[in-house]
Image (cartoon, rainbow, N blue to C red; front, top):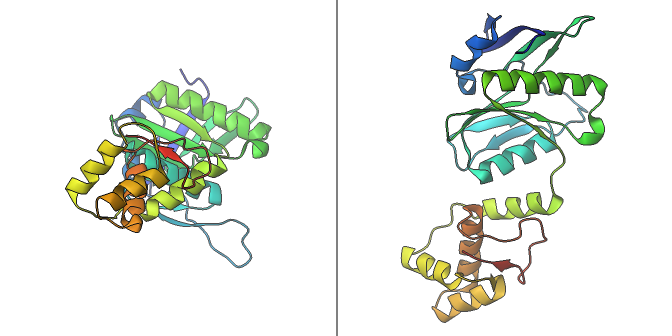
Length: 238
């Protein structure tokens, strides 16, 4: 039981504020459909890198207000494990014993299995005592409700770099027969160079084959060592 829970607030629309004072009430609420609790402000000389991430695997555009949040959304999109995502879904209040504190998580995700996932995005070096208390409270709240809770720290530079490349080719189209042949050719580990050579032998240009390889890597129908730099020598397999 979340002993220190005080209340939780969310916005069904930017103008409407709803409050719940019982943890049990939260289970039935669709936080993936609420409005961001606070607006994303923009002003001159702002240090944060912000924008709107267009999901490839969802019909959605989700706001982020830091480069790290954008990287989280990119990785979530590639993992294809969520059906809906909301930024800053609610504000939770708890009694710390000295004062009532509050915290707004960065994201709520509705997972493909129907479960909820609450995410805070923060580099480890920026997690101070106040943040640790907020994250621990949020973790306990999620446990009580039956949601998953995750702190997304600094990801692998190579992983994010690779995903950015793969996503550019996510909408690439080619003949289904050639796609099936390419996957068969990658039944065992094969370098991108050799897989391109296979495509050339099928009278398909190297550019087409490379584009298809990157699309299949985005879809994870081809596998690789995601955490190594991408090159023509990179090995892939179906």
